[in-house]
Length: 270
Image 1 (cartoon, rainbow, N blue to C red):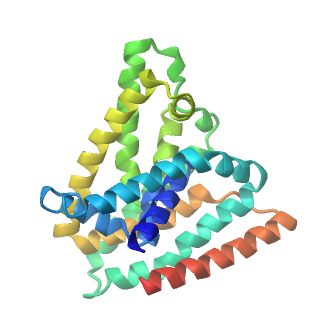
Image 2 (image 1 turned 30 degrees about the horizontal axis):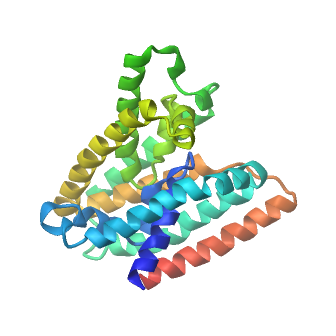
């Protein structure tokens, strides 16, 4: 039963990680597997959790390769409703995350990382609105092969660290760095020349990011929790699609309410 649940969670994480603006880390927090993933990634505990990671990883791959077309369809045809559903998931999980963070009382100084994280996300939201942001900083296709592979590695490294942090979308960072479309195309065509530097960047960024977050989780758990809350609140600005008083707008509000309640009840249960 646990393996089936972890497989489903992996599929959901995989789907989240291919959507620009949606954070896989946020979904992991909502699913209550974020801390478990981080703490299990150590030499001492990795062998004990090999089945957990195997099943979760299989689910992530299934989510990426199987549901990419379905997610593309939803965003192309029901963009507002789909984004409002994700906003509902984020908002519904915040009360339980705050309750967990203030378990031993709130230290006033920990509102500083919350405000800093929120400010960072506001800055990203402003960047997103700038002309040409959807095309990235520059076109990676203008580079020759060796610099292109280097930029793919660096972009994947930065994006993966961002992906580990709830609230930040690794896909959106790749979009800003100009490699998202190229990487997505390489996945669909299995272009190893592109995928190898991306995979190396993901691996290196993952190891670096996990070590950083685990250190904060051990030594400054409440500060980390407040940082995560700031990132998650700020991520709403990145996801927000605008609103129109139409039939789809009504569906968006309904989806928002249903996902908020479902997320709240799920996080409360866990």
